Length: 408
Image (cartoon, rainbow, N blue to C red; front, side):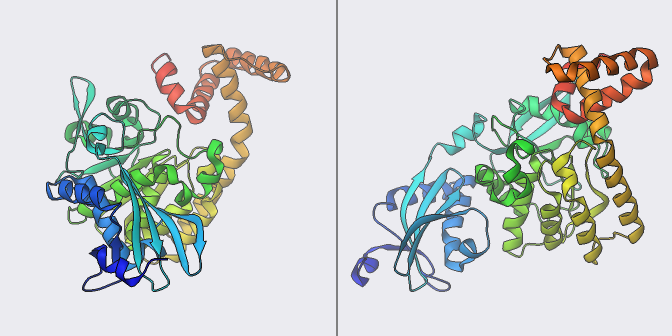
């Protein structure tokens, strides 16, 4: 253990006048000073990181927020844990006296450049011109100060930012508080999370049902939380998460809720969330966000998005600020039942359709069923083809938009 004399030699970075004392070891000081220097020059990710370390003085980080990863080291009354911040991982020691020491800092001081190269999460403005979407990196990470600005939180694995802006446009257009024509005219802001795999879904079931635990997107969520906080005074901002963007938005809302932030003039919507919408609705209620009649949209094949719908219904009825009626609950419960019942038939139809168009390999036991459905499509014509097309869009939207859309 360290003596009191050791602590007096260490730099106190927070808690001098109020809150819990936070000191930093000489080993971590050089990186900390570099971060402070960048923060003072207006580098917003460095500001976010420095502020995150300073917030240890309030104790909120350790108690409430989600980007703390407990370590395995416990000695007496002390505990070591990691604080995950944008471009930085801090090893922190909590002492018996309820004070904190930053032991080590692992920081990527080129984080800002990596953002511009689309290697790290960041915020972009998207504009539509000459029938294509173009994006521009926003150095300050802040939403345009335009009334009723729309902000997209996209899933990962679309490719570059321009490709993402184009791919998600139709999904954003389905939000109840905007239209495709409006988005083309005004553009929108895009929170981008570069990652090779999708977020959530059955492939990552653990994180899909507990999106707050997905440490892979903490960095992105912290940046989004800061963007949302800075936009709190802009009137009528609409936050639209599509597919795995639901996890990033849920984590960001949790961070803000832990700091008692309110976004009562803003609206939130989720398009086919691949993580639990129930966790998201709870955080949205805490922030006082406005919630449309349709908080989220899920297709019948969206196992994760549909799984907690009954809990969503109950939580919406409980919150007096959510203008959600018993009549809405009854309709949504019936819709949920129909989605579950229609799942199997829709999935098989999609397999047949995909097989014919893309030459996908099919296992031997599935061949008779596929042939039967292909025959049914041929006999019944456009109606069955439309059903299969819709099912394909439901099951494999990215494949559908890239290979099938426009061919019918």
